[in-house]
Length: 172
Image (cartoon, rainbow, N blue to C red):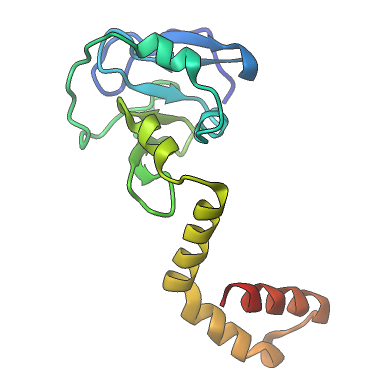
């Protein structure tokens, strides 16, 4: 969903959110600067700011020096962009940070300081990649190994089977 000029209402505390223009990304981020400090990202905006190498100076500046309301993070929230009930989801393989996500418009709402936690979760791209591999081994390894063992029965395309074999051998 494209960013609108409409002033959004914070799904956590009910205050009006402020649009902060991020020049390098050419987009507006909705921040609850006078309430709870939450941040709403329209569809795909979150990916512009979730890595610690990406600048969030404008977001930090909008939040700095303020005291924010405490909110119940377990409370079910309504998407400020489209009005759909939001769902609690993990943002990464580790599952350490749970955010509110809208399945209709793709928006994400992060409570105060959650963006910092997400950005600090992995120190390097290599540690993030290793976490993905570890997760796949732990949660899907048996299925992959069974598929690999039965490759002759299920392989319809030898070229694709070769790619699958390379993937299996690399990670398992």
